[in-house]
Length: 114
Image (cartoon, rainbow, N blue to C red; front, side):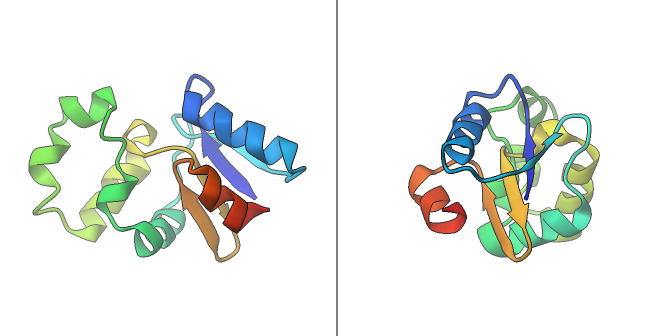
């Protein structure tokens, strides 16, 4: 499993704590230094929808006024934007094979990763 996360993110720490408690091994990738690949982002969009992939509470989201653009943005434009700026991506993203989760929801993690 690859876990795209950020050390200062409380939600990411909760996800890691859950995975550690369940003895699920993962390769942690700093999402701000190495954003998810376009193929991972496509998979996440297919699973969750484009709007769910954006870190709407983040400084970059607000600074770039993504909220005003997202309604007219194509999937390709969103993928390019997210792949180029990890701070725009909702975190954590956990991916292994066909399974993927975006953000941390304990019940979803139990279903997908336990």
